[in-house]
Structures are given as structure tokens and as C-alpha cells.
Amino acid sequence: MKAKTIKWLLAASCGLLAACAIITVNVYFPEKAAKEAYKSLDDMLLKNGGDKSPGGDKKSGPEQATPEAKPQSMRFHETPAFAFVAVAQAGESEADALAIEMASMPEVIKAYDEMSRRLPRINQLFDNGAIGLTSQGLVTVRDKGKVTPQDEGLLSAENQNRKTIIGSMAKAIVKLAGQKETKAALDQVMGKAAATYADTRREAAKPGWWQQLQNGRWVQK
Image 1: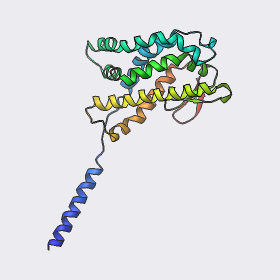
Image 2: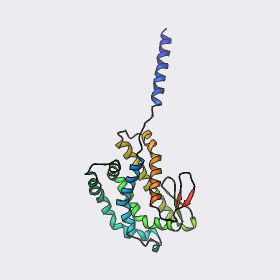
Image 3: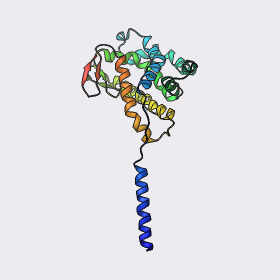
Image 4: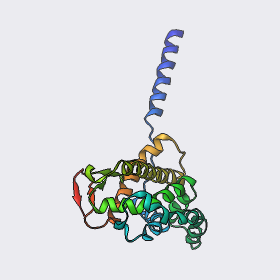
């Protein structure tokens, strides 16, 4: 009798564990708000660096693009504390809340700072068809003959920065949704955070730049 009771208890415990295992985290992904937040961060922290060098085609390499953008780096670190808080004074929208949350992350500010310095060279590589934008918002080589070994290192660093921004968006969404920052929660929104970032970058791309659609097909804007 005891043996049967023990077996029944074990079976019940296993059933309970199995039921708990299939419970999934359900994190709502605010696509429109995420896109607006990406744009706000780009406008505040990225475009300022790139716009200082409208004649990017006159530069022959990333090392020449860096000096012009360097003086901006200190200002990038000071901007979010004032600019994004001001946005929230009239009542935070979902996009505002996401932008403010991300702007409070040191790793995000650092990523944008580094991206702004190399932006002129990145734009030049897009202009001459050397690189393209992937469906995940990253950059990839399309014409190796137009890319130097130094450019390859630059592109690797660029992608690392972009992954930081995308990952930080996922963290911000999970946090503002009131969920714990678990792997399951982050995994649920990470793909959408990357796809939305790619949409934002496609919209900001210039005519002629190569882009990969979500179905994997490459096209020129």
C-alpha cells in the first residue's frame, strides 16, 4: 500500500513539474513604440555625429573620420539626462518611456558614441555598395574588393554596438512590462527588437543602399 502511495505521489509531482515547465512568459512587444524609441535615440545620439561630415565621400578611411567626431563624445554622454527627461514632463508615452530607459543605460550611450565616430565611413561603404543592411539590423560585406582589413574590424565593432542597442531594447521592454529579466523573457522579444531595429535603419537608408528584406531577399532602396 505504501509503495502504491509513493508511486502516486511521485507521479503527481512529475505532473505538477511538467505543468510548470510549459508555462511560458508572455511579454507584449510594442512594435510602434520601439520603432519610435529607436528613432529618438538615433536623432539625439547618432545623427548629430554623422551630420557633421556631409562630405563623407572625401574621406579615404575610418581613421580620418574619427577626429571630426571625437569632440562630440563628451556631449553624447551629457545629453540623455536632460533631453529625454524633458520629453517625459507632459506624461510619458510608451515610446518615451523606452527611450528614457535605454538612455539611462551606460552601455547604450557608449555604443552610440562609438557608432557616431565611425558613421561617416559606414555611410561611405553603404554609398559605394561595399556593405549592406541585414534583416536583423546588422551590416555585412557585399563587395570584398571595396573593403579593407581595417574596414572589417570597423564593421565587427559596428555590429557589436548594434547588438548592444538591440539587446538593451529587449531589456527595456521586459522591465517596463513588469517582468523579470530572464532568458525566456528576453528571448521572446529579442527577435522582434532586432527586426524592428532593421526596419528603422531601412527607413533611414539612402537611395541605392543595399538592404535585406525579412524574407531574405536583397534589394537596393
